[in-house]
Image 1: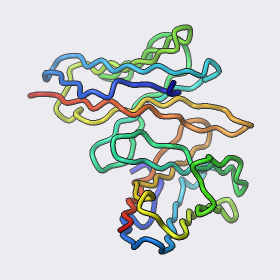
Image 2 (image 1 turned 60 degrees about the horizontal axis):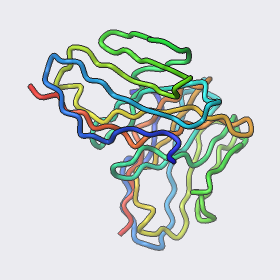
Image 3 (image 1 turned 180 degrees about the horizontal axis):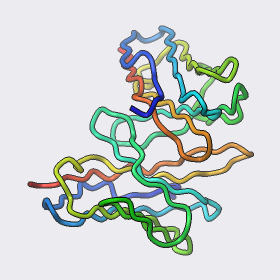
Image 4 (image 1 turned 120 degrees about the horizontal axis):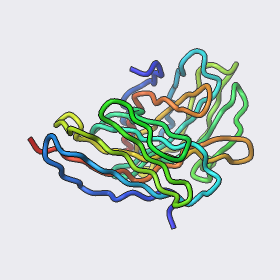
Length: 111
Length: 113
């Protein structure tokens, strides 16, 4: 257990529904990252927060995706109008410097 | 060309032998390099970080970095069945003041008893 928690651990939804995931980083870590991982591939960067500021967004993050980190603590990742291609493991990581520690992930299945 | 490349394997090694995992990267400006282990259905777990050319040892694991050749490797000595997992090479990339990890696709390692 790295100290990064994610909720829920599994989510099954129907195409077109909205879903929201939560990440709680290690308490003293000011940097928070979201990644997406599909089967047989390494994680792909989605977005990065330093404190409450979202500093970088990948082109993978379409308009249907939005992430927030209010007050620089926990973060949420919302996917609107889910598509079957959104099925993946969504990973959150946090760091104080450049070493990132990953949470257990949220596995999303879109039917 | 992919930014971080690994042989996807599978790599099969007998128990007790040395497993050698390799990774190349394209961004010459990268300064931080990491190896993560990922068991099936689980999230990546940090094994090693390396920042300077040469070797870094931690128990049965040795990371090697050659920035001139843009090459990172991980050696696992006295391989155990519990080492069977996918090993992810990750390179820290700085973009507009923000850092992100760029991962290879991972090498699947199987240790045969």
